[in-house]
Length: 78
Figure 1: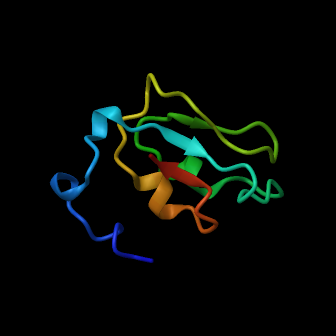
Figure 2 (figure 1 turned 135 degrees about the vertical axis):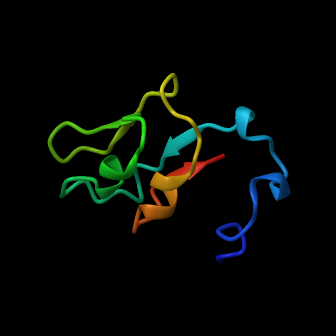
């Protein structure tokens, strides 16, 4: 379960530039302010009300902070 969490970027099978940050709507409870929005260092995540966050891929640097911080694992770099 946590094997990918501790991998270094160069150990990933996919290059980071080819990855996309996806929001898994079925995993997001959408009943609170998204905690991952606050940890994004470049402001690539936004949220209106309690809806699922929206990703601006032009801003996203694919650092993975939001996906590691999300308690529901609703944000996934794939």
